[in-house]
Amino acid sequence: MAQNPYLPHKVKILSIKRQTKIDYTFKLESSIKPDNGQFVEVSLPKIGECPISVSDFGDGWIEMTIRRVGRVTNVLHDLKEGDGMFIRGPYGNGFPLQKYKNKHIVIAAGGTGLAPVKSVVNYFYDRLDLVKQLNLLTGFKSPEDVLFKDELEKWSKDFNVIVTVDQGNKDWTGDVGLITEYVKDMDFSNPEEVEVIVVGPPMMMKFTVQEFLKLGVPEENITVSFERKMCCGIGKCGHCKIDDTYVCLEGPVFNYTKAMELID
Image (cartoon, rainbow, N blue to C red):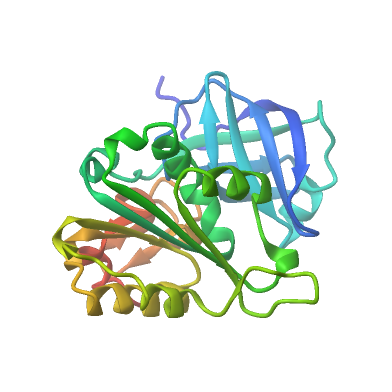
């Protein structure tokens, strides 16, 4: 008998880390082995289901950073360590890590868009010898919205990391302004060797990609993720469909040469 693709399995919460008032990172006991950038469907009985990107993973565990935005995530935030939740997946495709080797990689992430690429950053952080250069450019609305503060501090010791906020406060000593303003300052001696990953809100992605194109980065060297559009995860509900493309099946990670045709 064929296995029901909608059937989830229960996983145990190993730890919960508060990132912001509305963003918690859950470490779950799980044997699934996702690709960097894939997502899972998270559910609670009698509550509902929602797609969540896998922000990191290792042997026997995965992590997800979940924002409190609705009925399911509100209840998830009330869970404790040792409690369980249900997942199915992983779904979608991942970032083409092999394509980035021996290249200058620039990762531009806006807000919670940093979560789907966190495992990519960690992958190359542990293997800096595989790339010519690594830059992380990440932006948030305010200092209170900054995710992964410990990781940002760790990464910044070994490669260039810019953390900018739209509006600072009296305690903020970092950069202020939109990500696009910092892309303009980047100097690529050979744009053909630059590989760019852009993940974040739609408007941020649109204008950030345009800035990289102005610097001469070829369209085929830009990768984006449409993780916001996921629903059933298996191409049945049509929620993510743009024209003839099921984002949950062919994405959420797309080369820009394909993604620029999917603007809806």
